[in-house]
Length: 286
Length: 284
Image (cartoon, rainbow over all chains, first blue to last red; front, side):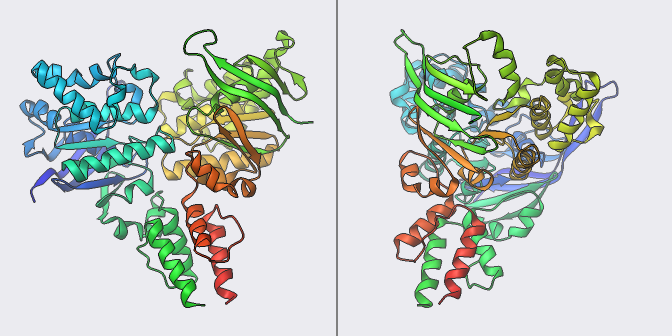
């Protein structure tokens, strides 16, 4: 499979120009990461680890100071590639209220298409399709500010889907949502990945969400320090803790029980796996 | 005497318009002094509307609110004093920082209370220590701080008023796991030191389970229950039906129970779950 997103020795610094002497803070210290087409990658790291900065490099919002970034085969450092990249690699942000521009749901979804000069008929078709995909079609004539957070995030996602992107980067899309809204958004993300083949990069602090990805990448102080399947990553409980991250509760339970000598699989990350193993143990000891 | 008491508290948004909605419906509640209360409920269940009544930001459509024995809104001139008694930290309080230095921002509340400069200084330092902010940043602009530090500074600003009741609306939302645990631990420590009443709204049952002495569950504008964590999680099936996410660990133990494993207790923390399983295995 081809690499859809690719960073090589990527360095990035934020420059504080408001100070008298502009200061530079390097946040990415030579990151290399390849993401293949169709992958569902969860990107973890504590606040300030550089994960959002990295995602914004893939979307050509940030430009690398050195090293290279290729998104959908295009060099993100070239000015002429910025718009094509943004049409193919969409981004969803944390706060649903900051990304909705129109006063009617369907107009908001149509916004980018209108800017791209898509035919009105085609716009109608794509907007309807996109809203149906995220299950917000019934709300197409509603005012966005009256929707719940989860609904707003799905409208924001619909706005991207209408552009038919090949990849969607989501920067903590569920951080401001309640459990119900979170579940709705996660369901939508998984459907886009599994049924429509959209490449997904999900930044999240919820370990249960990351456990649903195909691959977990962990960033810490501007470097990628872990990369593997959710099982491989979450079984390293102590290492994750040491960099301020968490593991799913079932993984923690298994970790504590293993320390007491109970024979369980360290790579337990789902509720089903945990329940099944514990039941087996109780059956055996009967 | 309860520190907070409501009688038939009802609040209706947009009364007399087609969008009229009852957000709090006939709520009778008594919160004893010294509790650390977790408030949960899905979006729209009325929890934010409820807490805004406790320091007089909203006036009940009907019903009464008593703070420390005194009825709110009975004498409007007392409202200011009551607002000093009940400190409210909104969601994402870091957006409300406005002063030119961290010190001045935290001092704003105490200053408005008319305290002496030395008392203000004492309170600012104490509350900075309480939320884990180093005195080195005191003269910095609050806008130069990291997200987590801003959040702490904003919380310190309300703590500095030394309210009898501290209410926080989702103090940990948007923070990473380490930042979340640190802030919640500091709130708990504040509660233990001050022995005052603390209430916090959270969507995370895991956090609520770990840190509180009482849980208030709101559902459809009413109080579903107000009880100890053990008793609340005993009703985890009903909580799930309400659309609340019970902790993963609780779901695991409910499934073990359903499969016939002899577990009597309700499990809502990983540590307790581990102990329970070890006990079961040793008894065989």
